[in-house]
Length: 380
Ligand code: AHG
Ligand code: MN
Ligand code: MN
Image (cartoon, rainbow, N blue to C red; front, top):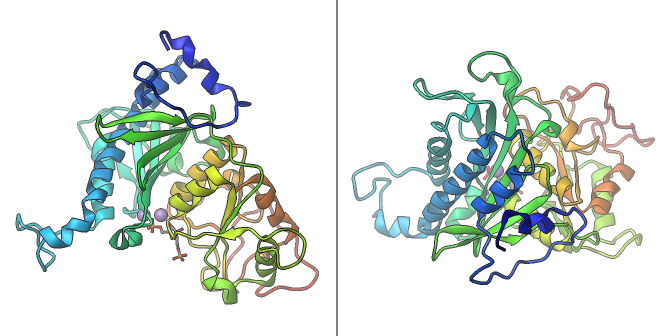
């Protein structure tokens, strides 16, 4: 591993994923990896690389907060006021601030959007405005924090498309297909960062002894053969019949295939990560109580869909690829089926109703799902 050309083998899309075993001389830090990838693009300015470093730094800082979350109740006494007399903040609010502060001053972004903030986040006056926008879920699965279950941070990056000096809503409402980078940081038994810039999906594990993310999973390929089904089937009573039939298929109840094992963490990022490495499908279908599903298109579904496709998997909302959805709102929800290609492809065999509750308008024009012969719950 002497010169930069030595890493080229990592970028072959045909190489199966394997965990890298580091030796004292072969350690590949995330910084080195990003630089090597950037060198493949002679016109690259380094700004996108800078955003990825900043996210890696934010991830390390959030990991630190997550690790001590269990101590907060002990150290923070019994009220909501901590030992310094400050009101204790929820961890997702803290994570939001960490991300914003890590990226707002670098001159690389012109605007941001976060699950934790209702509106566009502008770059503060006095800081240079850049040519990218960032959308993120600072802490995904945050209700799991209290019970010591993995959570994560998810992010998506687009190029600015408007002409003004600063970023606009239009820059944030782009279809996922135009993402230039996406990633997540998973705070699990170890902290991992997985990202893509469209050159494969690559995973890095934080070595806490040196505070560096080290390349551990180059060129991740989602196994073709799925092992897992991740779905909250407490909603079964609220699903339309085609969704129930699809789930029966996954569970081997219609005699068409072997049953998948059911695994549901309740943190999308953790469920996705397990299925990415082990093979499987995560589903959060629309139901009559949440007619558009629960998950958010721009900072949950889109970035994970980009990674899934880069790893040889797929993601759909039931009517087409997630990455082709034209967003209309910052906090838009979407049904989501994501993971191994074959299992996601099965969704097409179970035509979902256009919507599963009366009074909800069509979300997309020009991309109509077929209407099944026997009218399902709420079909138009
Ligand atoms: P967040 O904590 O960012 O609000 O996201 C929670 C999401 C997601 O992580 C998870 O897959 C889903 O909520 C679980 O929802 P249910 O409890 O309805 O299954
Ligand atoms: Mn979330
Ligand atoms: Mn969240």
